[in-house]
Amino acid sequence: MKEQEAKAVNGHQLVLYVERADASYGPVQTGSYLAQEFIDDFFEKRERYRLDCLRRLEAGEFSAVWYYLQILGLAEADLAVRVGVGRRAVRRHLTPAGFGEIDLKLAARYAEVFGVPVANLFQVIAAQDGRVELRQERTANPLLTKTRVGVVASGTADAGAEAGR
Amino acid sequence: MTVPFTHKMAAHCESGAVTALLRNAGMDVTESLVFGVSGALFFGYLSIPMLPFPTIALRNKPGRIRLKTPKRLGVSMQTLTFRDPAAATRELDEVIARGIPVGAQVDYFYMDYLPEYTRAHFNAHYVIVTGKKDGRYLISDTYFPTPASVDAATMQTARFARGQFAPKGLLFWPASIPERPDFKAAVRQGIKDAVFYMVKLPVPFFGVRGIRFFARKVQEWPKLTRDLDHLSHEVMMIAVILEERGTGGGGFRYLYATFLQEAAQILGDPEIADVAKAMMDNGDRWRDVSIAAARMGKRRDLGPQKLRELGAMILERADAEQEIFRRLGRLVK
Image (cartoon, rainbow over all chains, first blue to last red):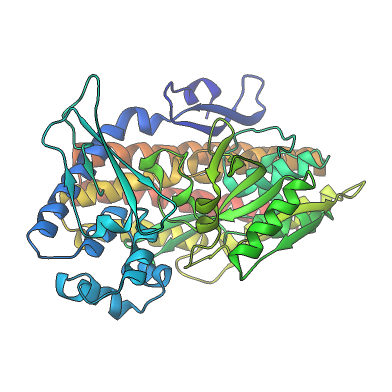
């Protein structure tokens, strides 16, 4: 790739290897062409799928373990190893009834893999108004999460006002 | 405690981290040389239970660059793994307190300075820890434009993630650098490895055979997806994997072309420089595959005919790479 073809201007920076004007090859730091041209479509698809999964979670078809498994794009086998249980156990925990059998310690392990507070396995926090901003913070207590609710200056009514993604 | 260290982005986390550590220790190497010497260039079509969907691998097994390159260049690398997270944290603190920037293997997902949309569980991400301040580790991550930091608890979680390629708290840093590394032998061995993995390995889903396998299998992806959005996502991921996931573009082929250009100089063989040109052109054609996949995905133009066309483009890469690697094999025999 010629150096001038590699240039894209955006915040998603990466390093590409290119052919320079003097025919030597080497690295150049630039913006991401894919992020520039295709990221909106990625976000739209992801949000559509997330909302569909959330609907099914709320309808009681599946558990929060299933929800996070879907939106993080993990395989059941991978999740099982990461959490330290068998695949059959993970499959059981994908249902509300099976999930209801797990203890707090296991819930905390799932939450750690999903990168969310334990509390988010049991709740969906949704704001009524797009101007409301929710932020969840860790505390020194591993089982306690602080959720801060604020009002953003120039709010956008997006799904950001929802904790537990 | 902050260790003096020059942060610089690189194409790939492992080759970037190893390069930065070697350079910091006084060895004049480039990322492309480090990558090429390890023989990391690869192709694999992976469809395994640990993955939610089939994917392609464009480099060899994680850890190979960290192990092979120092060995081939005569560098003595100090490497530690741990069972106890508390001991791993103590050791990390001690090493940086001695003023040594230290490589660490982590789960990419927990590196919370990276854009949220890029974060996924991958246990073989490599960063360099350059200090600790106010309970946060200072991080030089070659995927991030500036020095970053993560809190100590998150770092411990990232170092002890379970699963495939579990980091086990891995730390590494160069203990000693040779005065006159044998670059010629190292380059030759690196090329031989890549040739072996690309054209000699008798496995149908690895190397050039793997590219052909991928060209066929991609046409069957509609059967594996839940809907058009999902198919679109997976087809577009081909572009992300080839161009964005630490490859330097064109599925590591541009990076490898750069290595071959350096190899031609080191070995004094102008024919290898010719192969470097062919590899650069091959990278361009892989980028065409990426752009075609991304456009097809965005337009939801994913009918059998379009997937056949994509398969045909991929098949052409198999033919080209077969020729390139056979030629390289003859040159380093």
